[in-house]
Image (cartoon, rainbow, N blue to C red; front, top):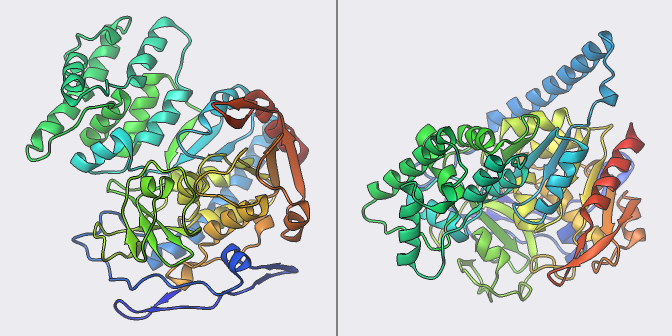
Length: 491
């Protein structure tokens, strides 16, 4: 889609992307057999309301040049290692994992036993739970998914490490806002039993940032903060971020306090200190704004919808694409292009394997993939496997989709298909982004091998599964074994 002037959207037909001998039709056109709908009329962003730093046209060229430089630098590093007798192919592999803050957590710990050289890329657009309350009062990117992954990677080797993990994992009572506030006061004053077995230096460090968080809350006298169900880890993260004015510094501090191995990195997908708003364009032309609204849909009238529902029913209209939106208004909205985290691009260029983790496809995985620079970096990896880990069951975002539809959704996100700026669209085939599919035994999502082969994906690996909370999930150790086998087959 092209934006023609102020508030006027000009639809463009669906293109068939010819790349070499491959022919790729974007997923939405395959499913609907028609050209893509335009977005509703958009207004131009203004500096006063744009909370996210956008990437400029000039920066796109800089990113592409940086991609080329990093590829050359990676080859030089390999040559240097070989020159001193170190075989880079026999070191623990470098992995990049795209996931959300929940589904992949059960595997993250097991993956660390295989290799600690993992970069976990997570979105910062969560607007539910205690994260939403922090963003409402203090602003900034969401920390919930980042905190959740950091917690899973935390050290548990001694009693103090386990005590620190218990503290940062703890959630305040949900019984009432008053009871939660009383419990929070006990924590921030250092009188709560959670501080047992936490030594003086650790206690002083963690408390300092909890106190800073409290002071930031009190500065916003017009906003009544609700502590109900609040995560101590989220509060610590928010205190560190507002103190340093840097998400990266907050992650570094949290990693050191919780004993995360230095080779393991937890990376926010977006490089910003502002609020990040996620949107979904549906096939009927409507827009849902907010990650929680997309994940918990309700009936949506035409236009922009902003809801918080616990409904588990499928969306009335399927998702066409995920985008970032830069307006808080329900009547006016525009697409924005947040700046990608450069550390994530650098991690991709030195990666030996890329994983698209299981979880919410459109609200956990795709928000990291649509960023400018990500598709370019993944397509440039010619000798690394790129593995899509399928869910065991459908969820509210993917009802009715097949495995081939999942691949097309990943491809469309990385190609930025239907982006409102046509110069930011890529033309790569699915096989350049996905080389393998991993499915759990008994997978409820149809795995059509012929459909997958037609888009160039022929390597399908089945892994042992188990039932957990009435859902089909992977047996973690078996999944890690499968990942190892895929990597070894490329070595």
